[in-house]
Image 1: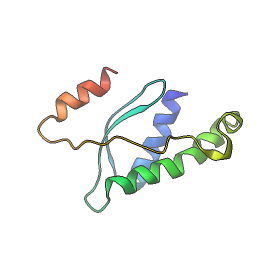
Image 2: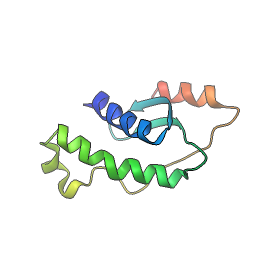
Image 3: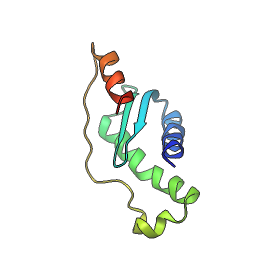
Length: 97
């Protein structure tokens, strides 16, 4: 199921022209290293992913609708950091989670 959720997120990234550098699913969260085009804000992209992905996830895994009622799948918050010179180090951290 984790791989399928990452696949769904990648489908959504491609629709917005977002570069997928790395993604890793942990039991209760996801690490994503993505390149967002300058025309989008970080909050706009996170909101887009959190709004659209539950519809696709619940369509593929209908049983989750009962566990996560009212199509709430993600927590309200998120943590973001910008990447510059440390891209390689952050990518390694994400892959080793």
